[in-house]
Length: 282
Ligand SMILES: Nc1ccn([C@@H]2O[C@H](COP(=O)(O)OP(=O)(O)OP(=O)(O)O)[C@@H](O)[C@H]2O)c(=O)n1
Ligand SMILES: C[C@](O)(CO)[C@H](O)COP(=O)(O)O
Image (cartoon, rainbow, N blue to C red; front, side, top):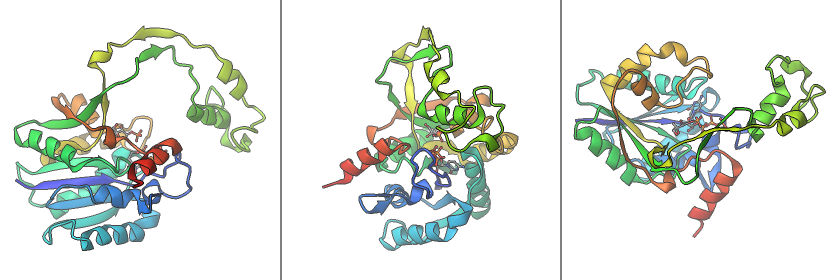
C-alpha cells in the first residue's frame, strides 16, 4: 500500500494581503510552506502545486526540507504549477502524481492538504491514513463548531464582499474600470450595503455541524476519476469545488469523518497569522 500527498500551495493569499503567495509568508522565521512540509508523515511521493511564477523558490524550499532529513531517500517530490481554483491546483498535482506513480495500484492512497493549514500535526495525517487503510473510501478530519450557526437571508456584508461590492456593485454589473479602490468607488454602495438589514432564516443543529479541515484522504484511483469527471468545473471559481470531499459527496461516495485538530486551522487572514506566530514563539 503506497501513500502519497498533494499539498496545495498555489493560492495568492489575497485575504492575508502580503502581496506574495501565501505559502511564502513567514511565521516566526519559517515559510508557511516549510512548516506544512515538515509536518507530513512518511510518504512514497509528494506533489506540491505552486504559483507558476514561483516554481523555483518552492522547489528550493522542498529540497531544504528534504535535506533536513524529513523524507526517506526513495520518496519523490515534485513541484508543479497550480490552477486558477483550488480544485484546478489539485487537478494539476494529481496529473503529475498519476504519471509519477504509474501504474496506479488499487490500494494506493492519497491525501490532499492545504499548505495554509501549516500547523496540522502529523497525528491528523495518521488518523486519515488509518481510516483509509481500514476500508474508508474517503475521509476528512473535522472539528465540532463552537459558535451557533444560523442561516441568514443572505445580504450580510463581510469585509470581503464589501470589497467585491465596491468593485462590481451589489448587482455585479459595474465594470471593474470604474473602481479606484474599494473605498473610493463613485458608484459605491458600500455604506448602503453595510446598512442593508438581514434576517435569520433558521438555526442549524450545532450538534451535527463540523468544521472541515485537511488532509482529506482518498484512494488515488478514485480521486483521479473524480477530478476527471468534474474537470469542467475547475476553471470557474464560482462552480469549482471548495474541497475534494465535496466531489466525493456529489458522486455518492460515503465520506468518513475523523477528529481534526485545533492546530489545523487555516491561515486565511492577518489574525490567523498572528495566532500562528504566537503558537510558534518559544
Ligand atoms: N488557485 C488556488 C487557490 C488555493 N490554493 C491553495 O488552497 C489552500 C486553501 O486556499 P486559501 O486558504 O483560500 O488560500 P488562497 O486562495 O491563497 O487565499 P485567498 O482566497 O485569500 O487568496 C491554500 O493552501 C492555497 O494555497 C491553490 O493551491 N490554488
Ligand atoms: C479545503 C478546505 O480547507 C476545507 O475547509 C476549504 O474548503 C478551503 O476553502 P478556501 O475557500 O480555499 O479557503
